[in-house]
Image (tube, rainbow, N blue to C red; front, side):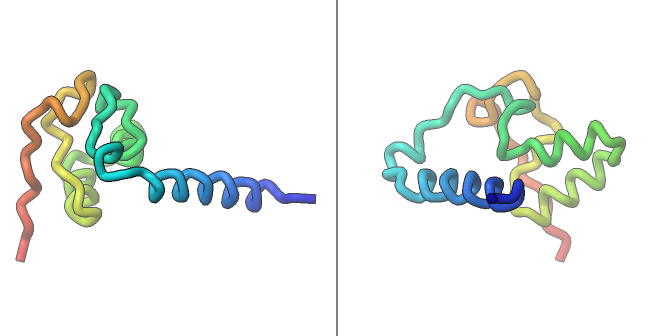
Length: 90
């Protein structure tokens, strides 16, 4: 039988394959998903729900190379907002 872990890996592989197969035009179209529901940023909203500080979330965003979403409206899609960048500490 197929274990739950194997099913999860297969499901993620299908998602990855479908993402790779998108043409550049399809990749550039931004869905109108509110920021708080965007799967790309779900980790960071989960961190906030679990009680992480804004500084810890900003550090995670910087570590992952993501824009600083902590100052944005979570009810609007990210592509319609002016996204501040996270300052890199060198």
